[in-house]
Image (cartoon, rainbow, N blue to C red; front, side, top):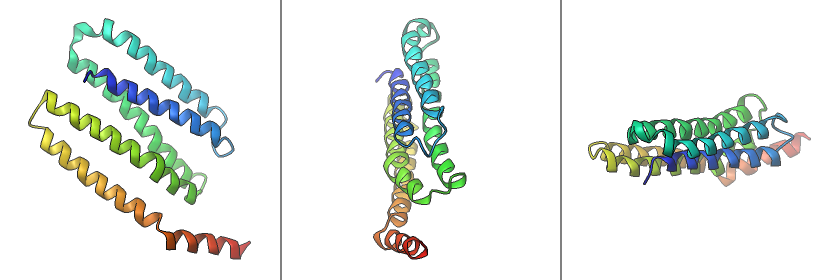
Length: 163
């Protein structure tokens, strides 16, 4: 696996964020989808130049640049989740965003990073895989508790009574 795979994954995450920001346009600032599209274009540009111009610097440098780009894309997903809760106070949408976007993006990114590490340094493999399992268990438990049927139906029932 080449390190540019992580830049491609980050680009896909930015494109996904752009599409979702367009679909939920009344809940996000109007310029947000365009910002994510520019970030995706920057990722494509990085893919174009990294193989040729960064080849002299070695695989570790390319891996670091691509991993930083992936981390920035993932951080934007988490930031939108925080934005929905803290600024907009859309708790139901934030829970759906956590379960449908943040949780899978974290698992997919963590899985590929943990699979890349054994190729480079075999001593990190058990640590990364164990931490991936712990994170997956914690996030899965949190999502299942927050999206449980009784809690969601009680919350929506309360909102209907108030209206």
